Amino acid sequence: MQRILIIEDERDLAELLAFNLQQAGFAATMVHDGAAGLAEALAHPPDLVILDLMLPGLLGTEVCRRLRQERMTSGVPVLMLTARGEELDRVVGFEVGADDYVVKPFSVREVVLRVKALLRRSGENPTDSTGLQIGPLQIDIDRHRVTVDGAVIELTTLEYKLLLTLVERRGRVQTRDGLLQDVWGYNYAGDTRTVDTHITRLRTKLGSAGGLIRTLRGFGYKLEEE
Ligand code: CA
Image 1 (cartoon, rainbow, N blue to C red):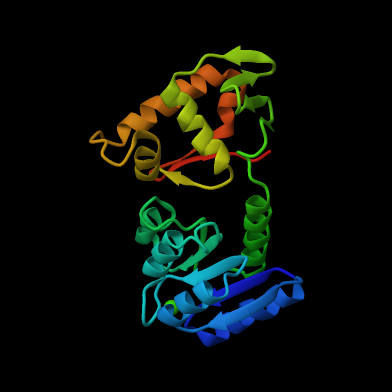
Image 2 (cartoon, rainbow, N blue to C red; image 1 turned 180 degrees about the horizontal axis):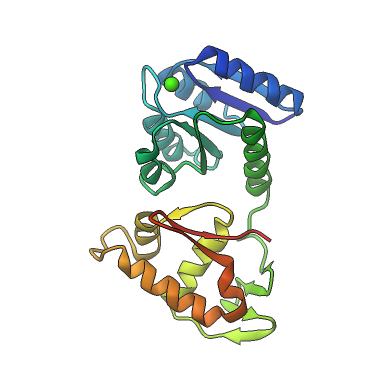
């Protein structure tokens, strides 16, 4: 049975989530403050963490950052619960590293669906397989070869890296800042318009598969899951 750790100080909400996750066939553990939640996650790494942003003890952002740093929990998907729209950029971006988020107030059904989607995604490691097919787009990772509807697409190293980053995180929103850091490198001094320019070029090159890359205005990009 897959185990979900819920770190949420609103007890009613934590219990509601736990109840619904149990109904959906998961085991759920609740912890009501940040420091205790982090300790629990490190002591017994769960399959997924639902993490509130505003927590007593230790903020959700800090808990997430610490989970990412520890070998035992670095690969555990984190679904962040947040009420503050302005934090989203940091939360799902490189800085904090949550895999997904929902904004309060949310429907519990939505949270359960997101949990299932994240677990499904973490169960399959796209870089393990040599061939990846998403709609008309096909990537041969071993050979660094990209084809669309069977036709080879010539990409620069950077474009390939950008595409692969989006593909590996498909279905998840990637912020411009996050992409800039992950694709171009931490010390790159350019601005986020660089990302827009390369996305535009990549879309053009991908032709009929270009539409897989969606723009989330003012926020970032997402490669659609098929
Ligand atoms: Ca809270």
